[in-house]
Amino acid sequence: MSEHLPKLSDTNLQPYFNRAEIVQQTAEQIMKDFGVFGLRINFSGNIEHAYSELHTQLIAQIDELIKTSYSTLIGVLYRIDLSEEELHKGTIELPNYNQVEAMAHLIIVRELKKVLSRKFYS
Figure (cartoon, one colour):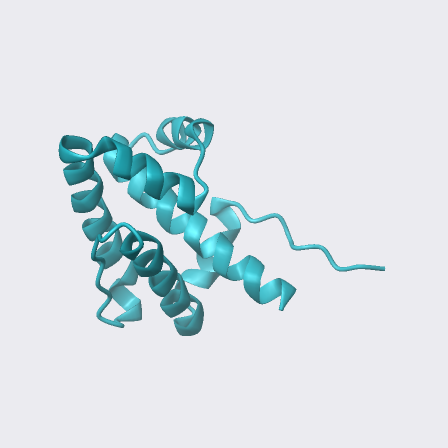
């Protein structure tokens, strides 16, 4: 019998947002994926404010890329593995966020899922 990674959805990811090791690894994954494109994301290490800290920076980066280098934004999204369909679905499921805010949120969630998948299979 093999173990299967539990289905990860926005509703069951919440407990991981408070685990220091997972939050740190998620921030590092975001910094790495954006860094490949010469984009800088910083993380203070403050777990309590990690989401808002990363979300705010991602919004600024995405907004700038939309204005100056849309092809780089597409490259980042491809590297992170966020499809156009997931982005579209996310903007509908997050009515309190504008498109850029929703995209930033989806990036954080996708990177968290990557970290959890890696941990599960290691």
